[in-house]
Image 1 (cartoon, rainbow, N blue to C red):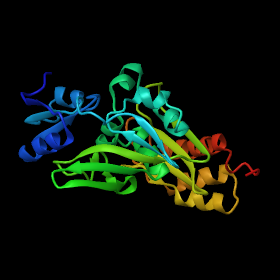
Image 2 (tube, helix red, strand yellow):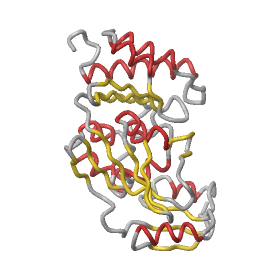
Image 3 (cartoon, helix red, strand yellow):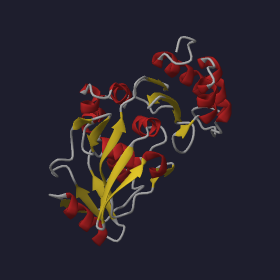
Length: 273
């Protein structure tokens, strides 16, 4: 199929982009990497009247260290996230995103805004306690990642707002594990472990509409429990739904194992930490 007709606007600034979005009365969409948007347009699952291309807006890409966190520009490509060394957990997670062609075009801001439950970057954002920076006609605001994601493919962004970047705390220790049918496929389950300011955070993606903190697993670890027990606790907390890729019980079992593997990579719950 082909896309439905639309008007194309190449924005030269954030202010211009959000003004155009405001003037479309909800009929506009941001075009960045296009790795999620273009297939949806081709299937006519979305029919925006206006596409606002933000790729030429200056100062919206790059990775910069700022004390204990890293600022990620919204237009930073996944391939750049893999190559950077300031945030090793982010580099490892980005390595699992799709294939080389997708990583070359896909953007950090686009992945966060798309809010796919199976995506790696939303899970890392929640796992590290990221802050997402958003611009709109009324000005700029900052939103905790835990509050931004409200459902599968749903965020708290207004129709006239766009993500400009995010601040991602750098963990002292980290672990990442993902299970997919084949390399490059959407993840069935993703597990993120991050030690932030002395706290071990365990987050599971792909098994719920949004990435979820595994609070019981974290409690097990805080009490000195082993990784295997924390993995079981994380799995028992989940309420996934079955689909053609696997039953709810299957996803729950996979989640427990992925949490255990991520904890092992982080060196947490081994009895030596």
